Image (cartoon, rainbow, N blue to C red; front, side):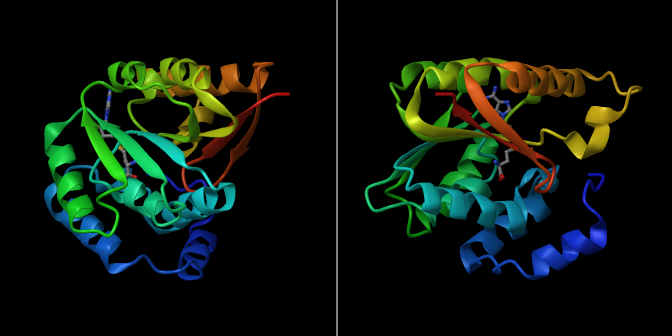
Length: 214
Ligand SMILES: C[S@@+](CC[C@H](N)C(=O)[O-])C[C@H]1O[C@@H](n2cnc3c(N)ncnc32)[C@H](O)[C@@H]1O
C-alpha cells in the first residue's frame, strides 16, 4: 500500500497509539503467515480508531461488511457497551473460519456473529437498525452497500467506509481499474448526496464517516 500520510508521521502516530492486545496480535500474526494481502487488516491505528468510535458513540448494533480474519471486528468489540453486538459479513469461508476461531478464543464470542455469503444478501436478511456500519469489503460493492445500509441506519447512526483514498490512486488519472473507478463513484455520490453529511479523513488509507442529514 502506498502511504498517503508521511511514513514518519504514520510511524509516530502508530507508536503513540495504545498497543493492540494479545488477541489482536495473534490474529495479525496468523494472517501475515497464512493469508495473501495481510495489509487488508485495519491494523493498530485504525483498529483503535474504530474501537474508540464504537465506545464514544455507544453503538449497540454494529454491522461490518468484510470480516477477513476478524481484526476489525475484534477491535470494535473492545469498545462495545454491555449488550451490544456485531454482525460481520464475509464471502470467503477460509477467512470466516480464521475469524470465528479467534473470536471464539476472545472475550467477545457472545457478541460477534460471522455470517458467510455475499454481503448484499446478508444485509437484505437483517432488519437493522444499525448504529454503526463499517464497510470494508469489495470496493465495487460500496455504492450498493451504501444504499442498502442507509435505509437501515438508526437516526444517529454512522456509516464508516474504509480505503476511500485508495493509497492515493483515487487521484491518479492513469488508474482506471474497476476498484478505483468504483471508489471514485462512491466518493462523488457521498459528497453530493443531500441525504447525508460526510467527512473524508486521512486515517490510514482514507476513512469516510457518514451520517444522515437533518
Ligand atoms: C479488506 S478485507 C476486510 C478486512 C477486515 N475488515 C479487517 O480489518 O481485518 C475485505 C474482505 O471482504 C471480503 N469480501 C469481498 N467481497 C465480499 C462480498 N461480496 N461479501 C462479503 N464479503 C466480501 C473478502 O473476502 C475479504 O475478506
